[in-house]
Image 1 (cartoon, rainbow, N blue to C red):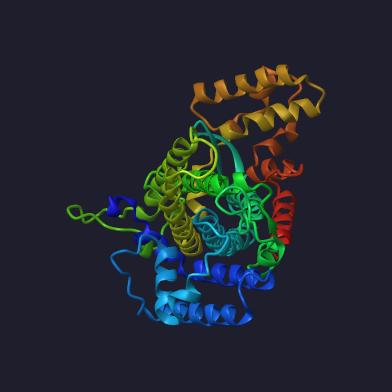
Image 2 (image 1 turned 30 degrees about the vertical axis):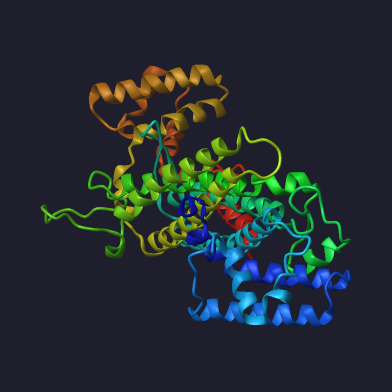
Length: 441
């Protein structure tokens, strides 16, 4: 049962947070007159020594150390004596202590992930700006649809990652609240200053209700939900690049560092980095769904089931950080082949532009759509490109066609006409880049 119950195997990762939280709590008890200033000084000195032992790798975990809290307090007693160390926990419950450790640790990891995500977005934005001239097929249903700029494709994913960054910062605000001073469930009886503790530990505020505080794991679940959405976006980005890097497309080529070969086939060049990024989304969603199922039927206040929040939190943070490191490397070293993108374009992709040309001539769109469809059908019947149909052939379909219809058969003209905000024209893409840069700088 001891082994089954213990959490020291993974919560030892939060030794620093546990010690800093204990120092702040002891200081508050000192200010409230619960312990003397001399006792606080001894506790603080002893805990800083314990912290240094962890940093140096000399801290020895004992068989009876159930968790990081008991381990640190046990060692503190060895350093300064049990009489004074025994006062450390006055008015405090492990229920609030574990939540404090988790919130501090997750808050700081979110800051790191925020920086990694910003760096990733900056690489995308820089490439989008420098490669804005490349035009490629845009796809719906994985079928060629309309021409777009390669930069527009990059910014389409950047837009999703931008929302991920915004959501992450919102999650941070709800994570960064101090639970200390709530006790096991009913509150603290010694009149300690919760706001003083929060300020010392870098929290932006305190939790509202003591009963809710001991049982609340929403701050972890919110991060897991965030990671599920984020890894879903990474997965879709990776899937596009997997497709674009195949021999059938060859729009891009991954750097050797992010590919592997085959144990049998010498010709293989596998984008394993992207496939692993795609696969991690299932892992992230499973962790989120699993913890939600764990907490959904729990009665009020703390229950041991909540210990199951540790491993999903730790693993999800690692997954998010690893994903960003790999994704950044992939996009930073990616080789783009604009000539292959251009070769993949087809004039039938400009059928909508033909319809829109007719609309500008006063033709109702539904009628223009039908006329353009007849143009496509004729080109397919004659097995020629749409832009090679003669004016006479086009006028046989509809007399409103004039010589300047040739403008509608240019890829550059097509993308430049999509000049509304968010569109694929040069000015629209550059505007998107400017908006995102303003957020990142």
